[in-house]
Structures are given as structure tokens and as C-alpha cells.
Length: 237
Image 1 (cartoon, rainbow, N blue to C red):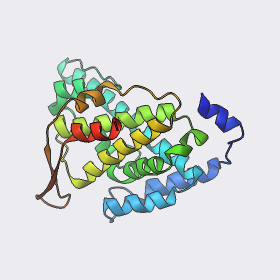
Image 2: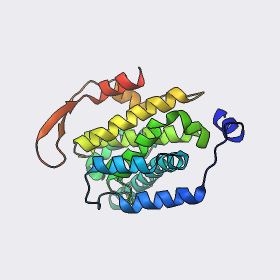
Image 3: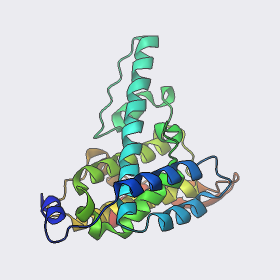
């Protein structure tokens, strides 16, 4: 509980919950799929907006909220599948890959339509960037343990979406995965007692397949990515 000792001790920081709520409202309503701005530009703007300690708290909360909403959506989808077909689907947060391997065509990717309006390539990607940039301060404003668990959950959902959920692998999606992976590495390095990598991430790291990366605005392939290799390079460095 080193983060709590620092929070209550000499490294205590002044946080403003009211300002955090105002920042969160701004990030929710001014950005996302409805904004007529490219996702990379939205990420840059949100990152600047959340540049202090209150912004760091908001950013960590956005990542956790996205993971919570995605999990709730998958549970609802599993219940709907059971209601329609009698087929039981198990939703395990620590590893979504078995669920998607079994039922991918019957599921919709939950990160693409979060009820809060958070978008994975805008607010979530920016929030991950904010935390990665200031990973050494995360334990001064919040507990990094639940954050990194939810971060890996979003990473799992994104890569399984590529493989089983018909999610298009474009430069915005790849940027999210790169940010998730880089931030995970930096947060783990700053933790006193970092958790083990979750099963879904370890499984991906054992793989060595390459996929095409598309232009978000068109049908053209603009590159390739080997997810397993990128995870190994970043998380085992």
C-alpha cells in the first residue's frame, strides 16, 4: 500500500474533486465520435486539458470507467444470447479471449458504443496517454493496482476485437494499443509490487502473426503490425 502512505504522508497533493468533475464533463461532451475532429487531434487536445494532477485522476477514471462499461455490456449480451438461444456464455474479466473465441460472431464489440459516450480512439486513448506520460505520479493521486488491471482489460478487449470481433485494424486502433502497452509498461515499472501479466496478454505475447493496418478514412493498407511482438518488446523490455 505504498501509494496510500505517499498519499497520506509527505508527498500528499492537493486535489479538487469539483474541478475533476468539470474536466470530466468537458471531456465527455466536447469530444468523441460526434466531434468533427480527427481522433489524433482529439487525443492531443484532451491530453493538454488533463495535464495536471486533477487531470491525471480524471484520466485514470476514464480508463476504469470504459472497462467497467464494456464488462457490463458483455454481461448483458451474454444474457441476451442465453435468453434467445439457451446458450450460456461465460464472461471472465481477467481473460475475454475464450468468450470471443467461442461466440465472436454473436457479440458486438463493447468499446465501440459505451453508454457514457467515451470513445476508445478519443477520450480513452487520450486518458491512457495522460497516465503514461505521468506514470511516476500515479501512485500519488490514486491506487495504481486497480487502474493497471482495467488498463489490461481494455487492451484485451481491443486485441480480441481485432481477432474475433470484426473490429477494423486501422491507425487509430493501433495507436490505442500502442498507448495501452506503453502505459502499462511505465505504470508497472513505477509500482512497488506490480501484478503478473494477465492470461490474455501472456497468450498474445506467445503469438507471432502480422496483420494489415488500414487508413481510417479509406480502404488502403498503410502498414502492418505484429501484436505479439510489440507486446513482448514493450512489456518485457
